[in-house]
Image (cartoon, rainbow, N blue to C red; front, side):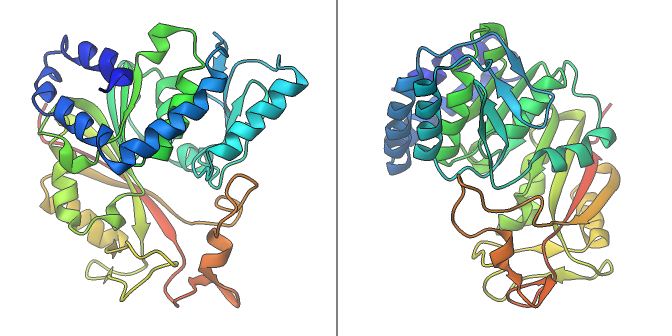
Length: 330
């Protein structure tokens, strides 16, 4: 069965807005457990057993390296920690620090967080959903901002296992119970209408139907709730949209890259109100790069070696924009 999510299921059963999720969630989790991805997940969890006795009430969720525990490991334990990091490669979102040992990730995800945090509604005491959250780095930052509850969804077994590594190191059960990552895609969620803030960062351009994705996000928000949307954009006017012929920055699964004006129109057409463009910035090799824990290709390999303002296919280099918008309501 799905024992690691049993407490979560019991918790949402007591919440009026989320209790209806129980009509579909147990079956979705069981399907994951029975799948090849689920089999891979439990192989990863087996690796975490060597760390099962490492718990601490010390953590820092408001720093660039989200950290758990203090620097109290023996030399042998430090080696074991570094080996565990390598066993759970590749590490994309982060960085992290676990009992003094740093996990240098492909993305310096705090740079994105620092760009958007001053412009979004306070997360204090809010119920938050993070869609396509990876291993949960930004979820920890959301909890650090005082969120009442943070739920992330991502169907990748490795990312969920990486998240579990850190969650299991927290001895404070009040904290650990307020943050959960489920192996699901957004299309598996019913219309919950339950979250004060919904984040979708780095997801929209991977969706074959961006309009459906924006409606799916809206259906998770309470009336008046806030969407925080971060996605690839391209320079142009309100009629400019890039649909790559094949790959974009070597990625096969990129379907839709709008201009900032075009995306604003799309959000408004989907019924969002108070749509605000926050910022736009080209991704640099200082923010996304290979590390010892992410040894496959990264941004430097995706760009034209003679012109870093273009992808290797000749498109505009990855440029990301942040929007906020609200669901009609209050």
